[in-house]
Length: 94
Image 1 (cartoon, rainbow, N blue to C red):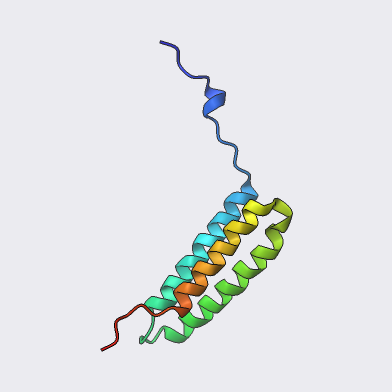
Image 2: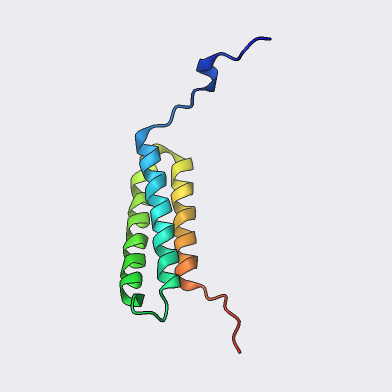
């Protein structure tokens, strides 16, 4: 039985793309925290954190243009997700 070549199993990820992904995950987490902080004493800080996350992801959309359309599309999707988490209210009204 032949084992696959180890070079074929290697995945090459640039540190810049990993950093962009980590920042986007943190921004989505910040938006989730702001949603969970509603009605608590952390509501104001959660709103500021979410506003900062929106600004960071918006700036990333502009920066990632130089990396190609795929990177911009991912950033735009993250921006849309953060906006939906912050704005949309899916709770049932009585």
